[in-house]
Length: 214
Image (cartoon, rainbow, N blue to C red; front, side):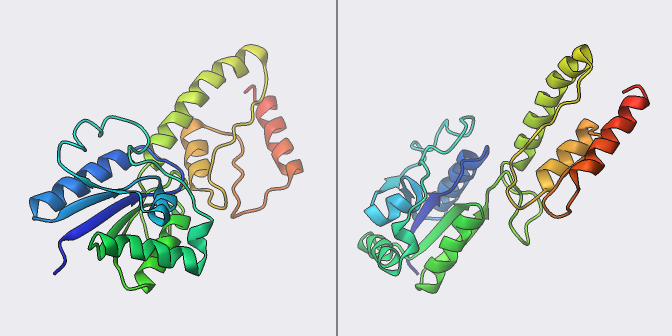
């Protein structure tokens, strides 16, 4: 069994990525694996930017935001030639196993590496919580709490000026974050991609809330 394992972070950074990297590296070292970090996501994998990691390298990163390995999307990796180059770079280091931390685009990339013959583990990390089959992905809970903190501050301004405020959160085609933030923050209307809500209906709901004294 090959003892060289790489870990890669890709896509948008999410709170908890560093904690995941630390846990992966230290667990791998404990079991006798040689652990490698890929710098700058798939872009770094295509360029061959890999370095061996020790327990000391991942010490103290858990409390830091973002990812200390860096993250970048790669146009070249989406091509067959780019993926072949990435696989060759792993083979140069004797790496047959890779752990990919990232969202839906990142896991599509991990699937491509799996089809190329590598042993791949995908770790769901996206504040959108839009990966099928996952419960709560890395980053979504922090994003939810930060959005709620912002709403608490905006509520004061809205009340002072007798205004209705629109809060937009990330999520792309997934309305999980908007739905949870809206429910927890007491929104009068919640708009999500999965269900169309005409602007007129939103206006009616806001008007009704105003008439109730809100």
